[in-house]
Amino acid sequence: DPAGPGVPGDRGCACGAGVKPLCATCQRWHELEASCLEGVVLVCGGRDFGDHELLVRTLEVVRRRVVVRAVREGEAQGADLMARRWAEERRIPVQPYAAEWRPGGVFNPRAGPDRNRLMLDDQDVADPMKRVVCCVAFQGGGGTIHMARLAEAAGLPVWRVGWSDERKRRKKG
Image 1 (cartoon, rainbow, N blue to C red):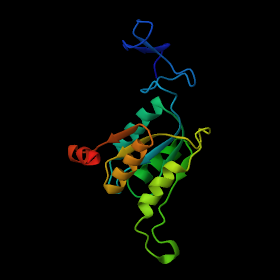
Image 2 (image 1 turned 180 degrees about the vertical axis):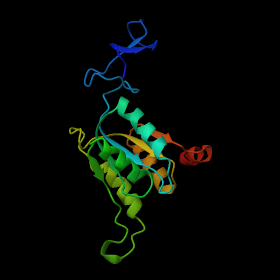
Image 3 (image 1 turned 135 degrees about the vertical axis):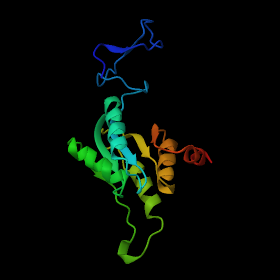
Image 4 (image 1 turned 135 degrees about the horizontal axis):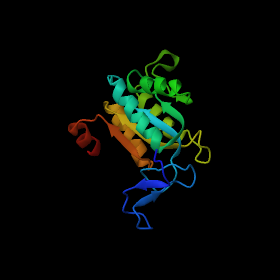
């Protein structure tokens, strides 16, 4: 966090002195100037994602720019459960959204996409504990791409971490 009243070196400020003002709501500087990012950080990623150090570094950077009231994750192996552990270690509430793959013992092929939609739809924009403000998407497969696309369609900032150029191109297709 900056030591002074803003972030030195930003030439876009109105005063011309090269200092970006801190957020009036939380007294922090945010990458996005439109509003204070205070609320739930949605984290998704592949089941094969295993770079714990990258996840920790990334979420610490996010934490400097977002007032994290809770972490919402899909309870899958990999990035989701690592994000849960990161949040619990910092005493940040976790909002788990496990997919119901076998309700009543019958396989549900729509469980992942349904859970992804619920992770975004289950919110109250007036309550920071229920307002999703951004999505951090660690490298993953089709489910992660789906979640990132849903978040973008909802107008949320989505930060893709560790994605190959091929994955970035596929997400736009």
